[in-house]
Each structure stands twice: as C-alpha cells, then as structure tokens.
Length: 102
Image 1 (cartoon, one colour):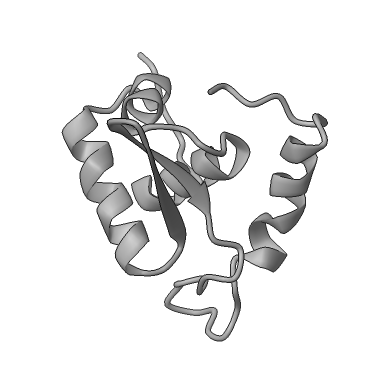
Image 2: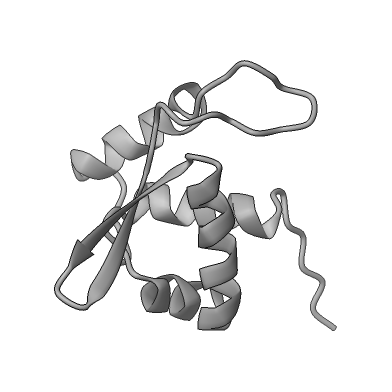
C-alpha cells in the first residue's frame, strides 16, 4: 500500500513546479505531476487570475513563470508576496543550482 503525503495543495504544488521549471507548458506540468492537462489548466487559470503566474505565448504554446511580486494567497499569511517564499528557489534554478525538469 502506498501512502502519499502532500505538504501543499494542488495549486501550491503546481506553483512550486513552475517556480523551478520556468517557461514550462501545461503538458509538461501535467506529465511531471501525473495530472491531466485539463486539471493543470484549471489550476494555472486560478494562479493566473490571482496574479501569481505570468503567461507568455510563444508560437502556439503558452509558457508559464512565477510572478515573484504576486501576492502569496494563504488564509493565515496576509501581506506577503511570493518573493520571500519562492525567490531563492527561482534564483537557484536560474543559476543552475537546481536542475529544472522542463
């Protein structure tokens, strides 16, 4: 029997994935996280509406990156942006200290 423990919600997990895999697509997220494209599309839509994720269109594909100046939406933590939570992770990815999957 496999027991799975998740520290964050689906939205949080997708946000973390995008943070360390900048410019990823819906399909790349879905494949890496064993979710359907439709599920990921819905999660990314919520994150975009909240201002947490940027969309960039390249050709016929949409590519996503984290908006570090976007609000960190959490019921008990008000007034924070994503920068203190994800900023170091994004920087490590940019400098190659964290290997991206995309």
